[in-house]
Each structure stands twice: as C-alpha cells, then as structure tokens.
Image (cartoon, rainbow, N blue to C red; front, side, top):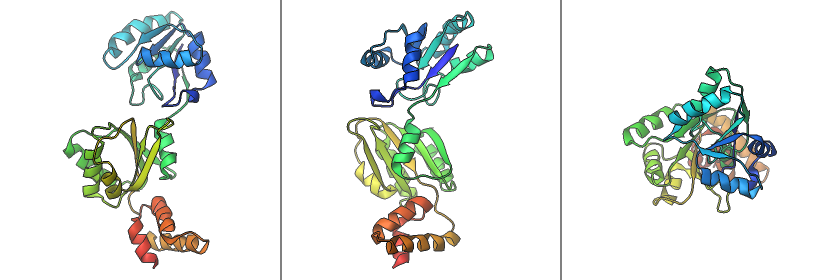
Length: 266
C-alpha cells in the first residue's frame, strides 16, 4: 500500500497523529528532502527508513519503488511541506501505483492554500488554485487578464525573489484588486499583508524572506450589484463600524474597489 502523507507547512506540531503512526509503521518513507523529514521524525521520537524522492529522481525512484509496492510493502510518501503531488513531487508515483492496482490512501493535513485563503479574509464559495505564478511577464499578463474575469478568489505560490515583480505587474493592470501576501504561515514570523494590489506592491519592493502564498480577491462585481454592496456597507456603519473599515470588509466580499465603495457611501 502507498500512503500519501501530509506534513506541516511550518509548525512541526501541526502533523497529525495518523501521519506519525504511518511513519512509524511503514517499511519505507519516501521524502522530498530526507534531512527535513528527519527533523520532523526526531521531534516526535520516530525512527524510520528514509529514501529521497524529489523532482530530479522521480522517474527513477518510481521505477524502483513500484515493484516493492506490488510485493506488498507498506510505503509512505511525503514532501517537505503539505501534501505530495500538489505543486510537489509525488504525482508520478501515485498514478503508477493506481495504474498497477496498488491501494493508495491519503492522510490529509496542513494546506498552505487553504490556510492562506482563510487568513486573507478573501473567502467565498469557490476558489481557484494557480500553482506557482508564471515567471515570464507575458504569461503573467495573460493570467491577470484571465483573473479579471474570474469572480472568485485565487491562490498561488510565489518565490520571494519573484514576488516584487509579480506584484508590480498585477498593480500595473489591476491596482485596486484585493490581494493578500501570506508569508511564513504557521511559523514564528508569520505575516499576512492585505490590501489593494497597489498598496501591497508598495510594501514588497524588495524580496522578503520565507515561503510565500498569495491570495487574489475575485473580480469586481457587476455595476448592478454595487447598490447591494453600498447597502451592506451602510448597515455595518449603522451597527457601529467605522466607514473605512466597513468599506474594506465589503470590498473583500464583493471585489468592488474599497475606495469606490467609500466614496459612494458618503
């Protein structure tokens, strides 16, 4: 059996009891980086046989491991953070195991995508996961145009080095678009920076440290919906909220620029 195990995205205490038990019982644990997995295991007093499984040896390791799975061995697959196969190595082995008739079970756990989505406040009934943002400016520009028609939140990973360029590119096209940069989620120096694209881009003119997840608010609601948004803003003000604070809340829920809502409510 192949057990696909989610691991903490930062705080080592976020690992589940099920995953820890699986690591202790597995015949072999496949790791993106054996050094990082060893730190997690040592923290929880677990000994296991580790073998590297990463993007540079994924094909070779899959060919080596599949016969062991077919022979009945219990193998755990893990990545450095989160769930293997989601913007991390693992998809090839999972597909091969399923294709060969090997039982595959998934042990869920921490997710940077959903953690960032909730922390950003840009919530809704739907969201879209983009993986890593494109490196090339042309591809980024095409993505911004596509997001301009997407009415729900979107979540992406980005490297610290490319973050300033990506935010500047977004701000140039959609300066009023709601966005939140989530840095070092669940770790000691966790930081969530929300605002318009222009505001957030101005705060990240230099590459930050740590792992980055970016949440984009949905495209602004049609003009016909603005009246309902202003009515909701007025209700919040009447309930005691400050007008700018109320405008910020309604903007996040509707995608309508905060400044437009604020001016329209005066």
